Amino acid sequence: MIHRVLLLLSFVATAALGDDFPRELVRWAPRPSKAVFQGEGGNAWDRKIRERGWILREPDGIYHLWYTGYNDDLNKNRYLGHATSPDGIAWIRDPANPVHKTSWVEDVCVVKAEGAYWMFSEGEKDIAHILTSTDAKTWTDLGPLDIRNFDGTAISEGPRGTPTVWLENGVWNLFYERRDQAVWLARSTDRKVWLNVSDEPVLKCGPEAYDSTAVAINHISKRDGVYYAIYHANATTPWKDWSTCIARSRDLIHWEKYSGNPIVTNNSSSGILVDTPQGPRLYTMHPEVRRYEPAK
Image (cartoon, rainbow, N blue to C red; front, top):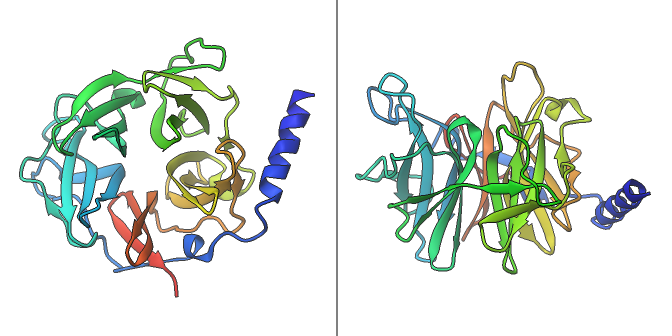
């Protein structure tokens, strides 16, 4: 009976949204055609970059980029890099890079709140953890996230990666994946204990082929009372070329996938939306930072 009620609520939540996703969120063109940021190459600590980086535009108009850099010939660690830009196109690496080296930092999400920056990141073995900073450069690792089942017991051992956080009305909403097989939602009011809203995923693979083998939410935004999730997906096993997709919801729990997914292919994934004075802009972060503008 409970499952029937949930299905009914899901149908009502999605049906009320109408048929069309906003055109400016689903039709994108690369601008320019090449990457706007990538690994330094050579023997640099960030010879390559990987996974999701994060771009935040500050009120002063400066764009901040946090990214994961690595060079396996130097060591196997994943370090945090920082860069800034006046326009979100031309980037200057921070001379203090890597800005955090004391813990593994990968696949980052940054929320600015309560006078600080809060970074949610994968650590080693895809264990989500939280870091904080007051200047966007110097980060303190506060340790792994304490994620619990709906009844308060600890979730099972294993990865809990691609942490994506949406803060609203004092509630921190955490989306996380487990081996990219599905996405769960947990909530917290203190960033210390995170309780699943349900022990069932809120986003699953399939049924279409494009996301049949992997899904993970990368970014959440809200427009006109509707939440939009940018998520990455894969259609093959083993995973090969990644794509960027979109889904929407009115409650962060019941999600409707766009029928025209994927919105970006060409092995461009880990996307985030950034609002700019010129309108929305999509950046895909893996395997390099590519910039997309709404297609004309």
